Length: 185
Image (cartoon, rainbow, N blue to C red; front, side, top):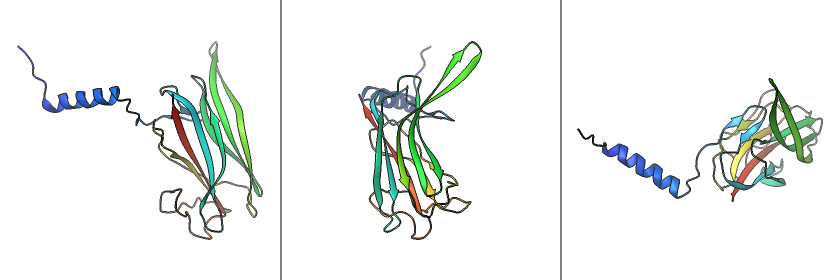
């Protein structure tokens, strides 16, 4: 007895095949806690993180720095912020783990840093917002840090858009936005 394939099953197979053959790159990437994003499943040439801030005058996004890297297989990258009074250090880190016997060791290398002065900042970042990252060459929102002197995080109701002002005047001292661009090989 011969089984027939249902029409929707055949359509799904054809769509998956077309996506595979055309190099469809829209899968979400996974974030590993304390390590960063696992980029080993994608074919990339360079990863670029761009750091922006929305100044307190017009709340327009202004670029501060760009970090580029090409982590090797099994290595993860992430942007970390360290803060103190009137100052934030933004760093690109590469992390990986290594098994030696039955013990796992965690390694972290600081690849690049940017020092940023924010007058009136008391030195504590209360939190951040992560965004979904996909395997695409478009510049993507990566993470948003509202900078204020409150114990709670204040986010604007709108998703950040690099072409429009962000935040209501007076809500935050500043905002740090990190974007990610994947240049495929």
